[in-house]
Length: 148
Figure 1: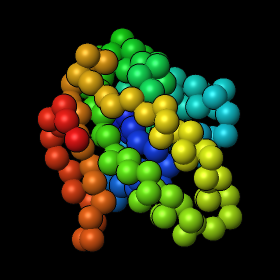
Figure 2: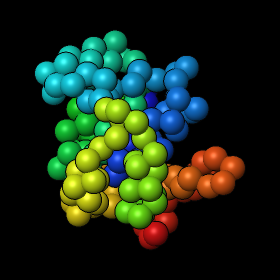
Figure 3: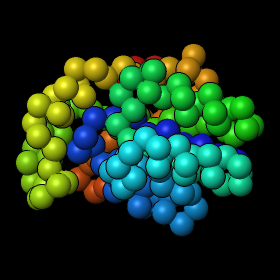
Figure 4: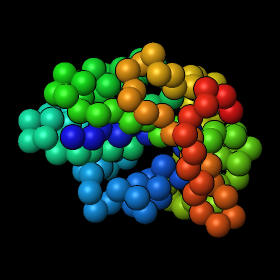
């Protein structure tokens, strides 16, 4: 089974990437949809117990945030993959400004996530890490090279 952990500040394309790449194969676990950690935990436990592949589509900007998912998935023998989304603050703020309604995050929220951002490392227990960048033609995905 496969657990995928997204990492990146708001407005870096995580949810769109999920829809394009994993919509038909993985359950989406997202606080944007579930609204509470309790509901998130219920969905996560259901995936683990039923051996369902899943994607955690949250910012997960710190190692501490990612550790919970990695530990639980590894305990259940999942392959754990991280997708780090290029997190350039100016680009994210520009994309966020084009959002409407609840999709738009207050600017201090985006800047706060950026200030906490810790790049993922193999030491966290990931089996693989990928780097994802938004280009003019869509997403470009590369293997992680421990550098940006």
